[in-house]
Image (cartoon, rainbow over all chains, first blue to last red; front, side):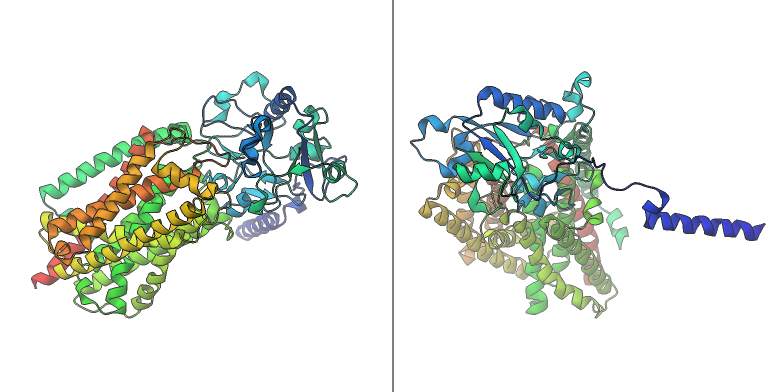
Length: 251
Length: 386
């Protein structure tokens, strides 16, 4: 009797050890859900056509994004913004001059640039923010310790911190259940709708923009984004910093 | 040796009670912050670090300054520091603990702090800051305790402690260098993006730390009736003078680079600090006070006669602390964030809970200094009585 109990514990122990080393053996599924129509790219990039965008369209893009990602509307300077309007001068002050009178105050869309060389990823002490192989810079909301080093590191002001519990500012009836709400004390930002791409859909702002925002593979010479970047003049924000931003603005 | 901490005069106990009250109030404010998040602070989307991180920056310097006694004593055999060194080491212990607490209260998810260890990330300067701060804390507790115990037993410190003492010298430099690198390596923050960050951090540290030590030594002389030694204090005063000169010189270098090049991205931060931009002038009065206090302190300390008069020396040390605290504890962090990457200008002034939590942590620091110094001085008295 004593001997068999010992054997049983031994067996159970070995099984637990084996499972912990290689969970897939026990049927545990690892990795994210992947759809057969998943959209893939070597390097995702966004091109924003400032000629086609107007105020109304920008509002639509912002609303689509903030609704889809359950971004709370907080009415003070501790707010959350994934994509928002910013005057030309504020985005491109290093590439403008005093006589751009009319252009200066025209609003543009501002969002995370998904840099090729992202300072936020470099400074994060827990790898809670990281670059995917296709260039998308993502956040792990469950690993972030809320140190906000990434916010100091980002030269574009693209990151927001949950000073408040965001759920207090969300309407339960309006929640989108495909995307998690965040908790207090973590940083968040635009994710190029990585979860939509993985399901085979384009990012929400691209869909809402009525063709004013293009999204595609920068490494594919025949992609829409490459074609339009060949044909038209474009800017990126603060190119001299070497972060290599991947949101292009057609002027 | 700890038993010496529980035998003290009425004054000692009243002082501890006052500190405990301050800590209690701060802790209450922290409970509020835990409940409502960092929304109780005045931090925002643009100025995302503030009073807490500024205190970390200032206090890391104070902690590093213990090395200014270790170098003369162990590398140059400057015996004047023998009696006082333990006080410097124990002050380093207290200030490092304050630094770590300021990091913790600044976190949005403090219960996830362990993630920094679970997912070590060498590319992050914050990871290295954690390594060097904890290492320096360990070194000072170890060295302080072992040498004090040896002295109490009237024997020389054990040989094995020597390597730790020597390591503690570059380690002290490293804590302030790495802390400067938190800022100096960020591409979009022109105010911080300068090679002079680490040197100027060290210079202000070696002025502020010994200045605080001198003031605390005078306090000990008055309240504990124990004299750390005139020569030690005079040596520290010289160190403060040199370091203060270097600190002011480096500020001048930074202002020259920004001012003469007139590159707007560099210049705007200095204009914001000293003159204010777009009507946001809250900091400018403080910054002029900081510079004036620093220059006045230098003018006083340059003359040996002033340094030798305890009252004047103490006054100059207060000026040094005011100058460096405003520069590190108020100006440096905010001005790094303003003007923002979008060239917007705003004012950050810490909120009530933020100030209370900060005072609470200072209370903890002073409590630790008081208790450790009580032990250290108690042991010293015991030795000197025989």
